[in-house]
Image (cartoon, rainbow, N blue to C red; front, top):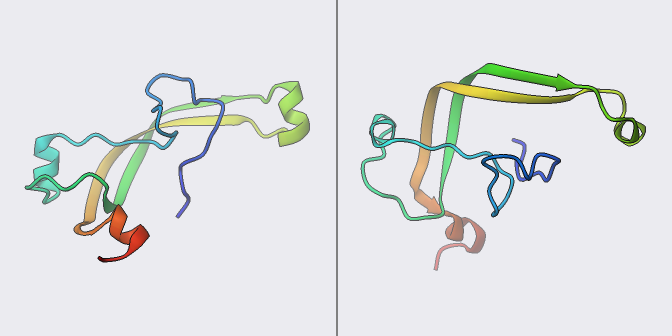
Length: 104
């Protein structure tokens, strides 16, 4: 897996979080129920997500001259992905605190 906490040029764009630049997913009550989440988990609860997504918007732009010198000629690519199928596992099993600090 790739950690998505990556600082990039899009940090100031719409919908970026002040906390970090990780993508986020909002799930409605009906979506939570469909995934088996029927009680509110503690903040920091870690889930594993497996999903299928469709690219609904793709943008590609050439590197600026100064960036091309350091990053190469590959274009900048941005995707908007629409999640079509998802499975959620984990949940109440381990919180972020227990993963980081162990059971007390």
